[in-house]
Amino acid sequence: MNQPKVQHTRITLRIPQPIQDKAKAKSQTEHISLNSFIVRAVERAIAQKGQQQ
Image 1 (cartoon, rainbow, N blue to C red):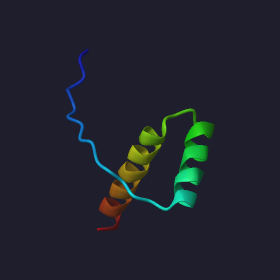
Image 2: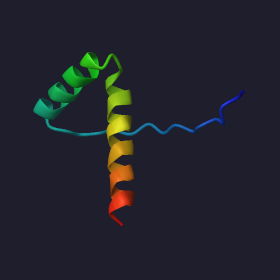
Image 3: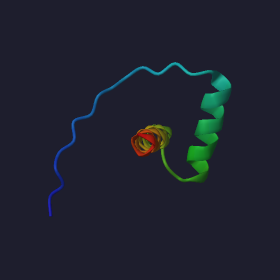
Image 4: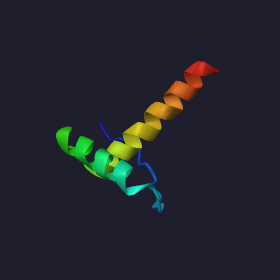
């Protein structure tokens, strides 16, 4: 079964180096890319925001 195509957008994200280091380390322990880790974190934040309303 084909998945619907999702359009991707490239952004520049500025975060403090210590946060990047921790996110990178956590993504490595989960065996995913830093990009995937950040996307999942944003998805969780959006889902939580929707539950609070």
